[in-house]
Length: 322
Image 1 (cartoon, helix red, strand yellow):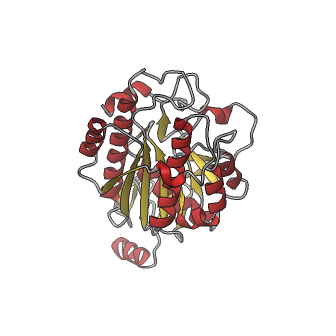
Image 2 (cartoon, one colour):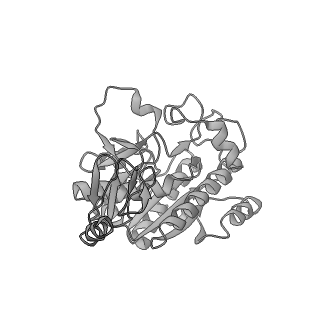
Image 3 (cartoon, rainbow, N blue to C red):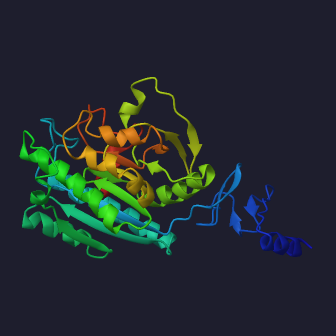
């Protein structure tokens, strides 16, 4: 009778929880395992399941790389005080590790990676090529000349190149993106579970609220420096909070990129204060969330309010991605 009952439940899409045995007979899993079924249902104990109505089909990852500029617009040194190349290569390596884990778990999701390089030396570029040789990645060079009529003249070439790189990454996403687009800077270290958690949480939260969202993988310290109110959500395997500001590393959908293209384009026309002024304006109308605790760490100066996420073993994460 028990086996028959389990079959009936499976047929109708119901899940059984056996709290005595600490198992789910319908899923053939222990309750401490991942109970969710990707693109079908998200299950978090003891909250039950969320039917997935917003399925994820593909993700385009666009990484902006500059291996020459140590810290843009600052004279401060980064945590561990290494050359910028070291941060770029470790960042890309941690991203590739996260992509590989995600792809092994969600095999039906198409993951493509584009690395947009800004004037790296050949020897530096060769190191990056070696890291990404086994994944679906293309490396393209930034063409600043094409933006000379779109971006106002800046005080420094570094600032102009930064704006051009950002605008070109947005244009790539607009032209080549299909479903989700992940814009990434090259001074972040990512935990291996980062991409898996972001995709699974994206489909859960988007399905709950019935619309596409923005996601930031980093729990920035500046989010705790005022009394801003926030909402706490349940993601795939951790809590998330609503936020009203990000830097230029975030994930969203092709639909929202098109809808707010004027904001994305305008943000790159000049150096604003804050730099992400017109991107942050979008969050006045759209849902943006970041994880608790962080899935990616922004490796800036230790005193930067835009840098190190709290409660992270920075040295361990740094060493793992050597």
